[in-house]
Image (cartoon, rainbow, N blue to C red):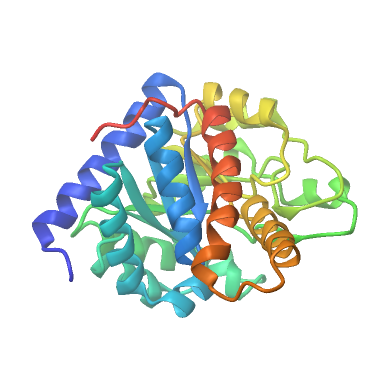
Amino acid sequence: MGLTINEIRDNTLRARHLMQRSRQQGFAVGAFNIDNQETLIAISRAAQKLNAPVLVEVSDGEVKALGIDNVRDMVDNYKKEYGIEIYINLDHSPTVEACKQAIDAGFEFIHIDISQANHDASEEEIIAKTKEVVEYAAFTGALVESEPHYFGGSSNVHTEEIDYEEIKKTFSTPEGAKAFVEATGIDTFAAAVGNLHGKYPVPKELDLELLQAIRNSIDCQISLHGGSGTPLHYFENAAKIGVSKININSDMRYTFRTELEKVLKENPDEYAVVKLMPQVYEAVQVVVEEKINAFGSAGKAVI
């Protein structure tokens, strides 16, 4: 059942207030990817237990698997059932059209990432298409996020080492961030300061001095993608610097799969999936709670 335009605008206004609170109170909001209902249950229960605001997000592949209206309905249902502050983010959407569909469905947060589909997209193309989404989002008040170039890695478990000399070539700069924000009018800038998608054999290292310089150069929100596999103290410092949103995916996927494999091994004669899954989403919930505590968002929900 779809939302009315007034309900959508009320939700986006609340989402904007949340981003303002995050800056004022020095906490970050977790943005957790979902590709199944069990993961949504884990996130919802963690949010309820810790009284924390959360975003759930879906990438292009996750939207195709679940259905954009189904995602909206599921989140609204769990929002009501658990009494939580929860919003939806369209994550790394590669096209303007997909962003418009999510805006129409009432998503409160929209991430337009033209370089996701075309790593060699020009800055002019990225700016033009980002501006188009910003202008379209004005009707509902949805917050738009973007970045000026391709963001490395993939949301999976990697075996290779992190080549930081190569990664540094794609780091954001204060000057670049300022110019991009001014050119597009986005609400949230996705910073690259050592964060990258995926879970790696070694912990990630974030350049907090660079992050602070970027924070000083722009007034809009800052997000960090690729939060999985990052030592928690970086999140604590990032929130204090003024990061408002941190994305988590691979840590949850890894826990989901490894716990599911364990459950299946321990219960070889059980075929009722409903009996197998609680242990899995309880394990994922532990991961979500750990991130929420590190982000400083526990106790920050406004219902």
